[in-house]
Image (cartoon, rainbow, N blue to C red):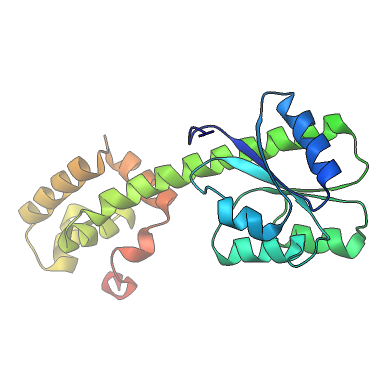
Length: 216
């Protein structure tokens, strides 16, 4: 059965069939889509990065443990929210999980309502992260379409330099700076300079514009 890419998916990785089966039934009863796997390797081979969701992950499993899977996901740049579940965990296990970015750590047996609440929170977090990432990527794409000179002028705008100051720094005429600013505003789809600066700062792209030495 195919799943729409906008549909959140709860991935469940646990080597015990009884636990996978009962948790899948519980989560599906809330209308959520669940994909369950008995090993970390099976999950890695079937994970769809384009879909929002979260990962319910057992700590102690044969071959690849939950911690090892978490490390592999970080290595691959995969930022899915992870909720660890374990019946044999200790403080060291939970501390290690949180240090590596886990959103929660639940010990079996856990309260079903608490689990469902944590899943809902994790999915909302993932959706928000993806929306922010998409917004930043679109802004960066606009910046990438600027010419080298336009990027320089944009860098000076962000540094609060006036047209006259920019012209002097770049050794071009005020009129040329005006032309570049107009082109930048159009390409960046900004209504005003304040919005333009906010976009660049939001995208954290200032370091890729004008080299710092040119402002000296």
